[in-house]
Amino acid sequence: MLEARNLKVSYGHIDAVRGITFRVEAGEIVSLIGANGAGKSTTLRAISGLIRPRAGEIVFEGKPIEKAPPHELVKLGIVHVPESRQIFGRLSVAENLALGGYRARDKHALSERLDYVFGIFPILKERYRRSSGVLSGGEQQMLAIGRALMSGPKLLLLDEPSLGLAPIYVQRVMDVISQLRDRGITILLVEQNVHEALHISDKTWLLENGRIVLFGKSGELLYNEQIRDSYLGGGI
Image 1 (tube, one colour):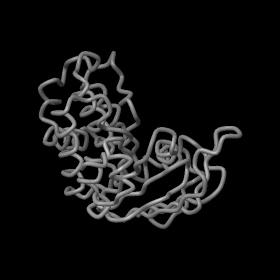
Image 2 (spheres, rainbow, N blue to C red):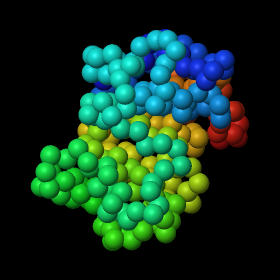
Image 3 (cartoon, rainbow, N blue to C red):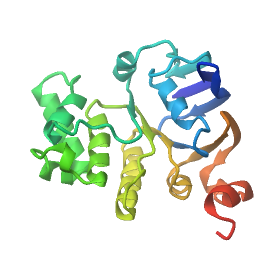
Image 4 (cartoon, one colour):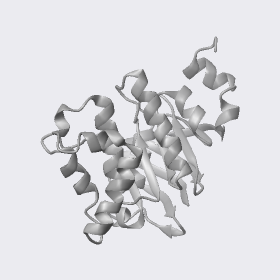
């Protein structure tokens, strides 16, 4: 479904991503893990068109997309849920969801998408008329994902969905990510909670200083000494 080939991204003279190559198959959850500044979020921004790569290719369903603007990528089915959620706090839950569904063909299609989101996040139906700014952090994260789902994505880019959440919400969000995969949505996940990322994903790439230094099936990497010592604690 998605392939990055020798992808390079820079901020001025700083090389953030240094020639990475990876592939995401349809129906997978693939995790990008690594320390802060490793290039994980930059990779997602390049895929969603927020940053233009300096070199390399990004191919989605057989088509090169590295020069496409973000709104065209949304039409293709690529939707990005950024770090820190970035919901519109002054708008209601209903208004945030409506913004995500702006591409719905008509009211019936919009209603179907709302029902789909409410089936995954019943709490959003309860909070439908409430201001988004007063929701808990976990509820805001659910709203951010729900807003993305309103556009009908094929590929969902999730950047640090567990960041700042209480443990009970972390588990709920991870359960939802697995559920979305089961519903046919492909997911590229950037996550600092390496333990949870390895448990729910099919494959994982470890980034260090903008380069992929390790990759493989997530279940096998749980027992990799490099990852255990650096990210999971040597005693696990």
